Structures are given as structure tokens and as C-alpha cells.
Image (cartoon, rainbow, N blue to C red):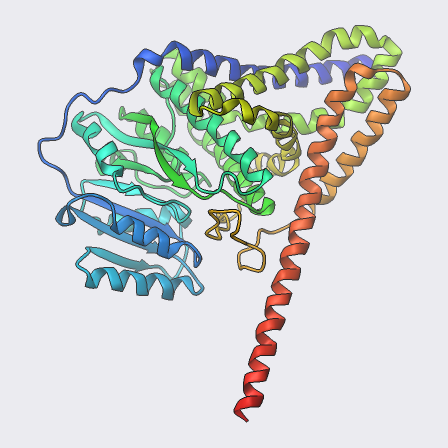
Length: 506
């Protein structure tokens, strides 16, 4: 009886994971079905409006100069542009940013440095505070890891000739895509989100979201939706849904790119993923009841549900991971062929679905897409390896555990020769790495068990789990140790140099 109860739980979780994974097929279907519904510029604004650029920063000493300089170089009439550096920093970034703003003000740019002594509301709070003194009718937001393109407003501003358009989002590109193995995988993951998901949702008339940066808002669309709020860690996702619920149209420009720097250090990447996962579930709890009760079309409601709750699949994947061994024991007791005939097809279809989704994103975005297929097995393993980190985020959101907005470290990494070791802002490691290691060991045992009991068809799936957990755990530990050693070496170098200078001076 207990065995059959376990099997019911196991298959319920497996089927739910399968449904979320299969949703990727539907996204691809919508993408290709609605190619003809690509946003078309219907006209141009007769008179260019005033635009405010907001640059929210917090301890970004390595990239803040690059951000400010690029923002001042955008191709837009100076008299119609004002720039706000919204700085909540507590370190050297304040002096660097303040000095940079002063230099550009002296050159005639309308640029202000706005520093807060506290981080009330975190990024959303800084953006809302900046709106109090914004001079524009429209506002563009760029995070510190972005480089605003010179023609960003030529690409976006005229879409607002349609008075119902509230926001225009551009697609991210990646300055450091080729930097390392993990940046290449991250880029493919993000491409799936932007190239397929955003396009499919927007062009098919469903809701999609502003990504917190590289987009332009009509300030009225922000205000009528209730402004930036800080009760979730994804203030951009939250505002996007509230704004669209108020009737504002959003536009996604798949072919217009905004260069960004993606995390090169895995603990920073995990922190970013944790924030996104937790924030999406917080937004789901906050807005899904309102969405489901609204008069929106059913297709919009269903897609909103999948979009906002998608990160629950990480928690389900973690539970599924822990149930793997009991499921193999059940296969032996009940008959492994019958079990395989039922659960392997689910796993196979889900795995193929995810691969198909990412292959399509690469095919649509790059001419050399075939060369990127080799990264897909590791991409799926990395997704599994992140399940511990992101499950904690999901549980934190479900049980209302408050956490602060943790920024993702940026190091101004653009080329392979650039180095981040020894710099400030290293990502933090936590005790979850022990769970990741234990799960890697657990799956090593499962592989041995499957081999001994001749359940060979399960071994490739088990290896995908094993590699994922070990990769995330060992890279987390390795990069923390390397970073600490590099930092200590640099500290000793400068201490020795100062001591030598003191002796010479004496």
C-alpha cells in the first residue's frame, strides 16, 4: 500500500514537471504562428518628446563610468534629454559616479546625481524617488551592467505615437558571451526567454514583462498602475503586469539589441537566479488572483499562470530528484519494464521539449546556431543543478520570508583577457552547496544502483542530474576559494608596497 502511495506522489510530481516542460513546445508554436503579428511602426511622432534616462546603481565601481558615458552619448537632442544617476552606493562608487556626473554637467549635459542614504524599496524605491524630479514624459531605464546604444531612442520612441503603448522593451545581447563556459550557457538560457518567450507572448496578444532595463516607459503608464512598488524582489515584473491590467499595450522589439554584461562568477549568478525565482512567485501570489478574476481573455490568464508560477518547477524538480532512488526500487518490485514504459516517456518528452525550445531560439537569433547545440546537455544539467538554490527562493516566497534585494556583482568583463579574481563584490556562498554536493553523491549511487540492476535506460537521465549538482557545487566552492586567494594576494602586494614606501620615506 505504501509503495503504491509513493508511486502516486511520484507520478503526480512527474506529470506536473512534464506539463511545465511541455509548455515550452507551446511557446515555440506561438512564436512561429504569430510571425505575421510582429509589431509594426504605424507612424512617427510629429514632435520628439522629452525623455529621462534613469540609471539605478548600487556599489558598481567597475562599470558606473561606462554606464554614464554611454548614456550621455545617446543620439537624442540634448535639450530634450535629462539623465538621473540614482545611486544608493555605500562604497567608492559614490565618488566615481559623482565625479563623472560633474564632468558631463560641465560639458553641458542635463545630468543629476541623486544619492540616497538608505535603500528603502531597493531598486524600485530608487526609480520611484527619481520620478519625483524626472523632466521627461518618457523614461528609459538602464542597469549598471548595460551599455545604452546610441540609437536606442531612434529604435523605440516612435512606437509611442500609439497613445495606448505604455512600454517598449529591447532584447538583451551579451558583451561577454564568449568569456567562459558558464557565460555561454547563460546566454543560451536568456536567449530562450527573449527570442522565443517574449516574442511569443507579445506577438500573440498575451502579457509579457519589462525586464528591469533596456526599455522605455511612458511615465503615465507607471503612474496609473500605482508606481514602482517594493513588496516583491521583481519590481519590474510586478509593475509590468499591473500596467497591462490597466490596459496599457507593451511592445517587444526582438531584433533591436541592448548590450549587457552577464555574471561570470557562479555565486553571483545563483544570487541573481534566486532573486528572479523568489520575485516571480511573490508576484504570482500578489497578482494572480486579480488576473484570474479579471475580464481578460482566457488565453491571457492561462499564460500569466504559467509565466508567473514557472519557477515552482525547480521545487518539483528537487523533490523529484530525491524520489529517484525509491522509484528505481519500485521498478524492481513492480517490474522495471512497466515503470520505464510509463515514466521514461515523460522524462524524454520533457527533455526533448526543453532542447527543442533552446535550439529554436538559437536558430532564430544566430547564423551559427548549429555550433551552439553542443551546450544543450550542460544547459539542462545546470538547470537541474540550480534547483536547490531556486527551490529555497520559491519556498521563501511561499512562506513570506523577507530578504533584501541582493545585487549581482559586475566587474566590467567584456573580453577573455579581462579578470574578475581579486576584485570586490564576490558572490556569496552558503550552506546550500553542501546539499548540492550530497545530491551529486546521491546520484552517483543511483547510477551504480541502476547499472547493477541493469536499468540501463535510466543512466543517461541520472548522469544529467549528477553532473548538474556536482558542477554547481564544485564551481561554487572553486570560485570562492580562487577569489579569496586572489584577494589576499593583492592585499599582501599593496601592504608590502606601502611598507616599502614608508621605509624609503623614513
